[in-house]
Amino acid sequence: MQILKIVITGPYAAGKSQFIRTISDIEPVSTDYAVTLDEERALKRETTVALDFGTIAINDRLSLYLFGTPGQERFSFMWEHLAIGAIGYVVMVDSCRPAHFPETQRLIARFAEITDAPFVVAANKQDDQAALPPSYIRRRLGVPAETPVLPCVATDRASVKQVLLTLLQLIATQVQD
Ligand SMILES: Nc1nc2c(ncn2[C@@H]2O[C@H](COP(=O)(O)OP(=O)(O)OP(=O)(O)O)[C@@H](O)[C@H]2O)c(=O)[nH]1
Ligand SMILES: [Mg+2]
Image 1 (cartoon, protein in one colour):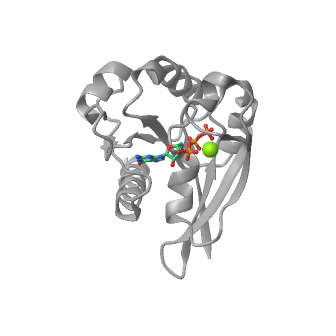
Image 2 (tube, rainbow, N blue to C red):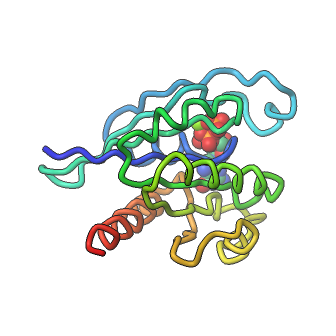
C-alpha cells in the first residue's frame, strides 16, 4: 500500500476541517477547542489548534493521508511540521471573506518557503450567495498562472474530490517534467 501525504491549509474558518471531514474514510482526528477571542467567536465556536487527520483510499494500492493545519497565525509553528513529506497541498480560502485575503497571501508566501510541493487554491463556500468568483479571488491573491484556483463547497463530497483530483493531476504533470 502506497501512502501519499497531502496538506490542507488556509486561514481561520476557511473550511479545512470540514473539507477533511467530508471526504475521509475514517472518523477524522480533530483537535478543535473553544475559541477565545470575541471576533473569532463571531464566525464559529471552535478552532483547530494542532491538526486534522483523515484518510481516503484511492484504490487498494494507494491511499491519501490528509493533514489539516490550524488556521490562526498564532498556531503557524505547526505548518512546517505538517508540511514535511507532503507531495502537495490545498490552500483553502473563504470566498465570502475578502478581509481574510491578505492573511491568505501571507500564508501562501510562507508555505512557498516551507515546501516546493505544488498546490491548488480552493475558493470555498461557493454555495453561499456572498461568495466571490474564483477568477476574482485569483486576481486579489495574485496567484501564479500555473496554479489552479478551483470553486469548492467543502460540505459536498464531489466538490472536495474534484479539488483533490486536480491537485493529484498537477503533481503528476510536475513529476513528468
Ligand atoms: N456554506 C458553507 N459553509 C462551510 C463550507 N465549508 C465550511 N463551512 C463552514 O465554515 C465554518 C468553518 O469551517 P471549519 O472547517 O471549522 O474551518 P477551518 O478552516 O478548519 O477553521 P480553523 O481550524 O479554525 O482555522 C464551519 O461553520 C463550517 O461548517 C462550505 O463549503 N459552505
Ligand atoms: Mg479547522
